[in-house]
Length: 491
Image (cartoon, rainbow, N blue to C red; front, side, top):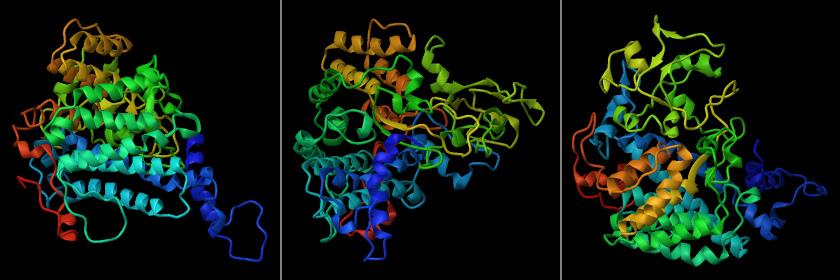
């Protein structure tokens, strides 16, 4: 198990140990009684463990909704992945508030359940340490940012109890998140990695602010490119993070050693499961390739056009699995008598059962696929923020500000790492494409497409969609719970 998980969950373990002691006359030597816990800053920080644990749902919530973009497809293969046409509706932008409530309510409930837990700790009289309070408020702002990005017209939940909160505009929530992060920033730690791995520090706050400003025109109608650049400058100039020489080292099964990753969700196949990209993307018979304890589900693949957009000389193209597949001992595999060859082509969204359907679509190995594991989950930590994205965000901000030479410089830093040919010119279309090649399946694509005005355009298996699809509907479940919520326009 990774040491960072042990550190983060220490508080939970101590509290549970304290609560399990029933003989009040017994002298304890190896635990801290509950009523005495929290007297030091370190003990108060340990109380954050369960709150960070909820970040473990980040991957699952984003993985499903990523199929609304042009980089991911979950086609119907015979009867597999039919699921009432849910994946088809997401791909074609024909989702409905009631018919797809489970997809949208999952994201909404995850955000606000996490926020409620944070508010509970913020109201805990034991939490007096300024640094711990700052971390809690930054984490709370982060969940509000996620809700803002997906649903726009949301509620600000900054306290426990009281009447049902009122709905806010995107501009109002933007201003609140910005204010929260700026207020807590001086009290956040500056340590990167080590015991602080997987936790919020100043640079995580910088990344949230950078994302907020980069998308400010979408959220509020007013662009803030210069402000986004300042946040990126701060992270890069800090020297706390460096680009990994090997792009794929950031996604290995032991990627907690990456010096590029600014915020990652720590996973452990046996102690903290939940990261299972391998199961979602690999073919059933890939079990023979990677010696997994269970057969994968043969679902997620990348869109043909997206795969084909990668130059063959770009090392990042190796994130996709195509071609003949082999067993762990090197034997060529077959599927129902046909060579087991992953093909980038997906002939139709709905395909009849058979090898053609099962083998259609390039699969993802951006995150190293764990071999000979004892669980269907993996040990890779899921990366939320990393320095490669910071360089590209700064490049985009500079490009939009007219500083094209500086933008090209940052883009070429990223391309050099991938072994790609340097660029000498840069347009907004080029910038979006570069972000796609670098950030594929890191769940920024929907946000990027919206910011570049490309989310509603037609692509394979999807006709042009209406502008209101840029934000998701308020979940029907939430509308029934809070009378102050009104459905987003268009729904």
